[in-house]
Image (cartoon, rainbow, N blue to C red; front, side):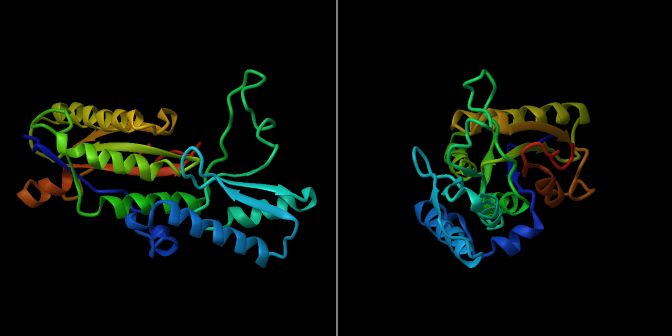
Length: 247
């Protein structure tokens, strides 16, 4: 039988420990964006780039999106310097949005895939946020328990600034019970978490859900400890356009 609770074990990205070791969920917010803006500004100065102005998007919500403007001759160098800053997501040049597709010609706006550093930073945010926390489901079902709503809220806020990324919500079960039933339940639970995040304004086109049932156990055993580890929901962050781990 599948236990009533599913332990969130977030897929770790090794580089996040180096690029984001000092960052925690408590550091997320306006102060974090201010610090990121300072690092991006320093990157411009250290690269000898003058005549370029930079802003971090804050309205209507905090993001890791950087908008540059100024000397067009410095455009490529400035964008490259800022993209190299760990934690930065989308980098754009003021006035270029229409050229990238703003919908004025009937085409959908496009989003630049996040850099490896930005993906690692986003994954690190989720790792820090979910440390020691659990999303619960009602026994034998995919219905989220009421006490999990606050965690979903926090996850949505952590994912909001991760421009240019996608997130696969992966459902896993333990090795006990009927494999086919576990497979179906893992998909239902992954779907439910994905829909809950979308309801909290995480763009639906950045989210996918996949149930793996008992096919990828962390421990190939059916002890109580092994079952607790194997029952999990995993969040895998990747750059938009890239395949998530397990696809």
